[in-house]
Length: 329
Image 1 (cartoon, helix red, strand yellow):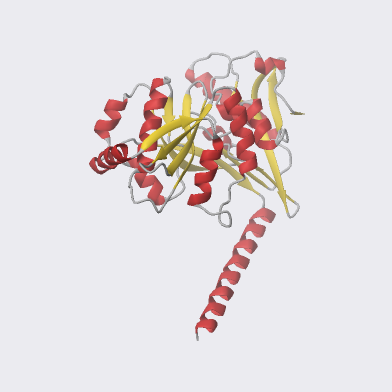
Image 2 (image 1 turned 60 degrees about the horizontal axis):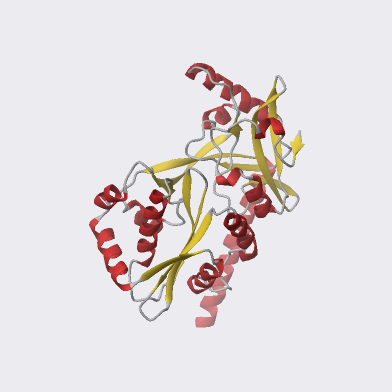
């Protein structure tokens, strides 16, 4: 059964794992309402649901995350039980949920680190891979984080703090401007109109802000965007001026974000990373990586399409390289 919004049975039961990315207003902003929800019921009561976002390409259907949505997995509404019974109920519930999935050629679910369902999905024939993020629990004080930071990281933050001014607002245009400095429009892959819709929904609920770093001449050199729910504060977006002579602007904004999350009583989530360099930079804050499980499955046809596309890209790259060499002769 496919529904646009959770039934009243779901809404009246508190979910043990419910992030900002499960909110209907977030999903509506991220997809213009083009998402579905499948539910599993037992004795007339919803025991699990899963929001689904589907994209199509070359006639192939792909279930994936909505734009700018970091994690999105099943919500469980199971009755209290002993550990063995709960694990059994999760396995049975996910097996029932899988049976309700619509036809697809590829599926990829990115789960929250606290999600309990990866093992159950693996028993249903899905591949489980791991992405990583870093988190600072609210129980860990900024003072303890500072002590555990790499010395070079502390030095960068101190230096940047002396030369930069950090201001907080809810003006996303400050971030967008910095993003276009970081990556000019020709190379910038962001969908800013989509980002604006999501952030506006966050702002209306007082669940988002922008932090900007300015140098002594009043020039913006870095910008980050935070979004949060009642448990976690996510380092959602970041951009910087790569030509600035002042090092550590991003480090400073991360540090200010850590302090901000702690003051709000929230766990700070570094929200994964985009490169090996970024991963090492985040790791310098002294936290251990934690897994974000990835649930994956694809048809043979989809695998063929991916392989063919990779081959075409390789041929195109070789052709461009050949033409470049010919011109230089």
